[in-house]
Length: 297
Image (cartoon, rainbow, N blue to C red):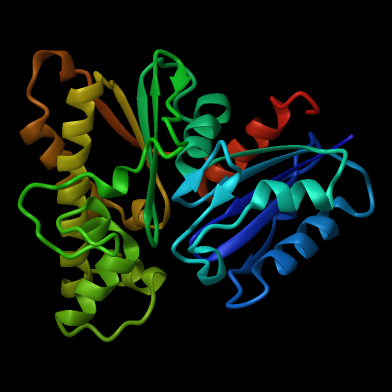
C-alpha cells in the first residue's frame, strides 16, 4: 500500500510518500513549470511511487478550486488558470488510487490539527505567509471546507487602513499587503534593490530599513486581520507559519500590537498568536492526512 501527498503551491509542486519511515528530507520538489504542468507533476508522482501501486493520493492546491468537480485553477500555474481537472488526471495515472482534493488552506488546518500546533484546541486559525497567504479555519474541532471547497481564503480579508491593489482585482486585501510577493513589490517601489522574498526577509532581520518597514506593514495587516477573524469565529489560538513568519520581532512585534489594539472583546482575552511548529511541510502534511483518511488510505 503506497500513500502519496501532492502540494500544488505558488512556486513549486511537492510530493511525498506518507509512511512512518519518511521524513522531510524525502520530499521531492520541482518549480512550477511554464508549460507541461501536469506532465511534469505526473512524472514527479511516478518517481516517488517508484513503480508501486498507489492506493491513496491527497492533493492540496492553491486556489481557487472546485472540490466537488475535482478542478483546480491556481493563479500561479498559467496552464491551469481556466481550470484543470486534476482529480480525473490523477485517477487516470493511478487507477487503483482513491484521490482526494482540498484547498491548500484546508490542508494546512488539517496538518496543524493532526500533527502540529492546534492539536489541543477546538477552535483555531492557521496562516501560511509566504509569497502568497493561505489560511484554514477550525471550528468545534472540524476544519471548515465551504460550499465550493474555498473556505479559508484569509489572504482576501479586507484590512482597514490599507488600499493596495490585489491580484484578485480588489483593493486592501491582506495578501496585497502581507503576502511576500506584495511586500517585495512594495519594498522595490520604495527604492530597495533586492529581488526575492527570502532576501527581503533576511534584510529585514538584519535591520535594513526598507525591508524592515515592509515587514512592519505586513505584521500590522496580519494582526488586524487576525483580530477581525478571531472575533467573528470565537477563535482562541492562531498559528502563523511560512517564510515571513521567520522574520522575527520586526514582523511579530507590530502583529502582536495590532492584535492587542483590536482584539478587545472579553471573550478574546485569551487569544494567542504563535508560530507554527510544522514549518515548510505544513500543507503537504495536511494533504497526507487527507490521503490517509480516504477509504483506500
